[in-house]
Image 1 (cartoon, helix red, strand yellow):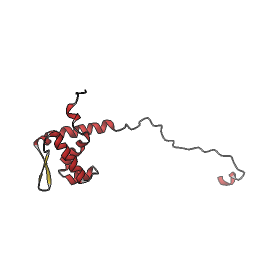
Image 2 (cartoon, helix red, strand yellow):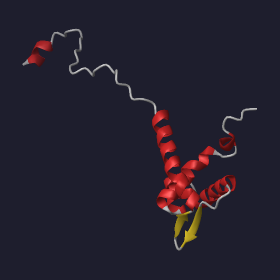
Image 3 (cartoon, one colour):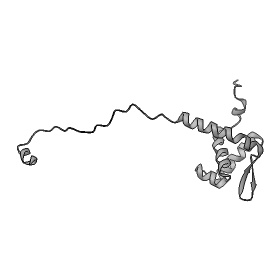
Image 4 (cartoon, rainbow, N blue to C red):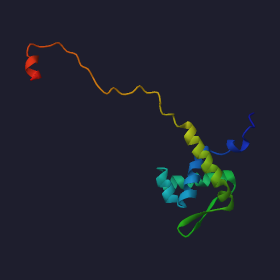
Length: 119
């Protein structure tokens, strides 16, 4: 049995962008729009993350979602990890492309009328 990452084994890592979006926007609706999810799906994902981490993470204050103390402690690390993974998993741009030709030479058989085209 692999015990290298026991905490990670109980958390769906797809929930981390949900946490990050809610933390940054302080809104379930805005976070759902950013992630192209329904508000219902985002609320369900947030509920699963709350259960996995055993913390409310966010509480509603008026129309805003305010982070718990634990969420505020987690947020910088989660944002940093997501940024790192995004950079590392983005395919590198090819820097060794051959330069695009600046001139193109076409060859074709010469027709007897080609002299008239030169004028």
